[in-house]
Length: 389
Image (cartoon, rainbow, N blue to C red):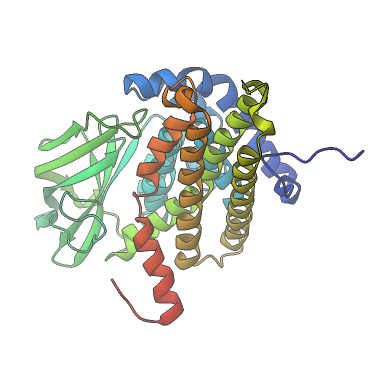
């Protein structure tokens, strides 16, 4: 009799990975199993980010993983970074958000748009977790329209003076630096702002029902003065922050796969053990249909992200392709998390099980870095050549 397929990987996508990629996945997977899963339910319940895990995340080389070793980073390929995101989000979206912001939204712009002095100063310490970053683009009124930016920076001698506010900023209250995007007389530019600069304030957002094991903040800039040496010199305009977001969204296409796998694994185990009307819940046709549909959707998402990663590593990835995968995979995961919560019945509403936590987290993941509607319109624009925004 042939061996049963892996229910979380029906198409054996793992066989398409290189030995190095499998090693990365296994290493991060063990970390999640041993260090994250035992505590993350309580962290979510308490609204606490597990900051104590940051040194080990750094030691594993997970921060800025795709940046060259010259800057103290691991120099991995894009698929390996995706697998890091997938495994971290199997633990919790908040932990993946931390790593995603540090890597794609803070270290990447310094690497891509900074000068050599900035790269050598910041990147090794950020890879080591000694400097934590946050990314200041979204504003209270802005949302999906980043061009409608009110934060501005004005040149004053050899300095820049920044005024404005940013909202929904992951890592804001634990960050040592903020990558801040502001309007200038010469278009939108990026700045590295130390969070201990006079006039900078971070205010943590409380009473969240999503990403509770993550730090979310509002940032305020009141005549924040920084030297021109802190400006990212090699980009101007919206292509700067949007280029960062493409990198981060790529990782987000992988992350929800991990969340969905965690939920499916949970109900596979639960329905074998739960006896209703004299038989395991797993023997019920309705339950099998639901779980089969989950496996179908997870498999589709795995193949989408793997091909996207191969395109990325070949230098052929386009933003529209990222939008399609972010839209598909976030929708897949949130639907599965909600369905799994339902299968778990009353038990599903507690953090003793992961489905409700993943479902609530995914409400943020499906919204941030481009809502589902925005990504649909990006794909529509590609198909028709007409901008419907």
